[in-house]
Length: 208
Ligand SMILES: NC(=O)c1ccc[n+]([C@@H]2O[C@H](COP(=O)([O-])OP(=O)(O)OC[C@H]3O[C@@H](n4cnc5c(N)ncnc54)[C@H](O)[C@@H]3O)[C@@H](O)[C@H]2O)c1
Image 1 (tube, rainbow, N blue to C red):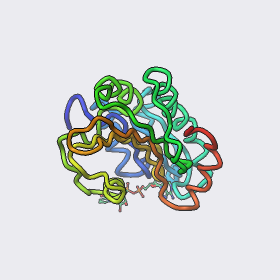
Image 2: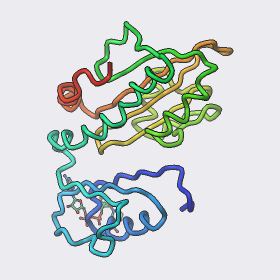
Image 3: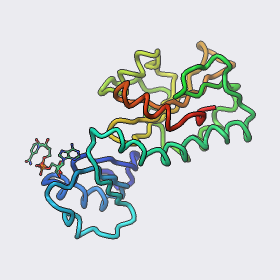
């Protein structure tokens, strides 16, 4: 494991079991921030050795439970403050035709993207796929990105896992090969339609 991990936040579902009891202290020692979502079927003292570590957050719950989503809404709202900052710091407006309630889409002059990047990193960490790299299609998220036309190497993708069923992303999608404009998209992916309906209700108006 690298001593300064590029990926700083790790979510471990079922992390209070046999594997998690060994893995989580190692992740913490390596400098990761770890969230565990678990039913704690085997008791709650599995992490006694790392109790009080500020980088460990435990959420007691069933990963299949939609209600658990509510607990994650504050993290999402915190990340969505980025949209307000894009407006106030860079004057970027939401596209009028963006009708997806879980997506923000705006356009920036490509010259300002370098200035916007540190702001996005503040909320999402370093890019999951920096411009210049291809997308790898390793998982659900990469598959989603490809489906919406986002596997080009000039695109930059930031990714933040909120819970086992919720992933946020921010993407810079340059227009054409020598672009004057770059789309900025911030979105939330839910694993199922049922979860999406629930989250739309809980986040009403937040993506404006
Ligand atoms: N132990 C091994 O050597 C080993 C090897 C290879 C793969 N695995 C796999 O790794 C996974 C974890 O293994 P383990 O040995 O740590 O298992 P474990 O039974 O010790 O732990 C599983 C944990 O998941 C939690 N859990 C179960 N259902 C849940 C739900 N719906 N929502 C939230 N939490 C839930 C339980 O409370 C428990 O803490 C399993 O899928 C296992 O097949 C284990």
